[in-house]
Image (cartoon, rainbow, N blue to C red):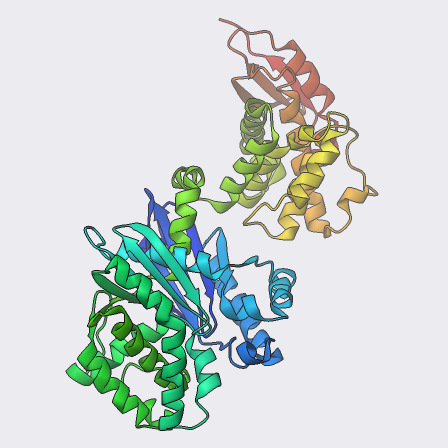
Length: 528
């Protein structure tokens, strides 16, 4: 199912990674890309021909089999995207889901089963996104391009003026819909072909009239049907399918020869034509006839293939509307850290305090490794808890540590598993107030190992929070050393009065002493 073309060097580079999933009427596609400097590089592609539209567009409902196959595919794609470090994962559904009476149920199950939000888009939005992709892949300068996308449930036609859209149209003339309506025989009978042509021409007549007024100078074809026809025609002419179809031209003469071959053969026989996927074989009579009718009506004798379509359009649209997040990702490649910093930015009026507390907490952690014996993963969780310990002030000053716990748990922090989130939330919860007890309800749900970890990290955070009691960033550095059976912490405040910080840290060291059995003693570094 998935097929990657990324490499280790690419995956280790910085920048935001995004996955775009196109839930089409015939296939589900996903691309994973790394974004940098307003552009993107494709890291991986995945595709599965699910056939959501089969039977749906005539019966009005997604079949249980199609829904099950589709949901399993989406779950697999989401796991793949997460493993590649993609965040966000953007998913859109088109005609089959949009028209199905139970399309909402499909979307709801995707969310409830594995947390994937699916946006069901209109035909107009689909056309806009497809054109957005094509204009970044094909040079439209000084052109009046006509972009055609033939899907399973609908076709999208977009007329441009250079890189701008002049008009667009979405029509219910997809190949699955037309095949189920007109072709009962294999191969199609002449009467079925005639009825097909009459119906499609009638539906497209207003579009042809409008296009002739705007006089397109080039015709561009995207997505499965047109790319498949291009690949098949190239294979018949040259003996092999081109490695890349982008900018490859399908001429009318070649299409006519291919169409005759398709209409004269049964599905099982035409499936052997190079360039055609077996599961698409029954749809190609409708696809070839539709492409020919479009070329006739639009008075073009060639179609230029464009390998970019809806999914690339989704990526480009996200980049265009989220420049701030994209720039942040270039500086903060970690999904986890970026998510934490975003929450801290949204909910905190005094980010300087939390950053100072995080810095002091890590100094304490690093200086006492021989005592607590915690690893780098624990250090990371401590830092995130410190950065978020005061987000609850956004809700209320009173009991804000409890509000912090709630926001951390419910705030959709990305890149963490639920157990990690609970540890972070618990540590933030106990940065102030009474220390945790074995019976504290906040510790319920944590296994004994993580319960112990949360308490130990809370002990460190409480001391660090005390060392910035005035929120003025007075403590610059600290030196730790053992003496007389206690841990002495010498604080350098660059000559500023740190009395309140020392007092608060000493008061909040009770949990530390309980955890590690080693009293703390704070004093100011002697001034020079």
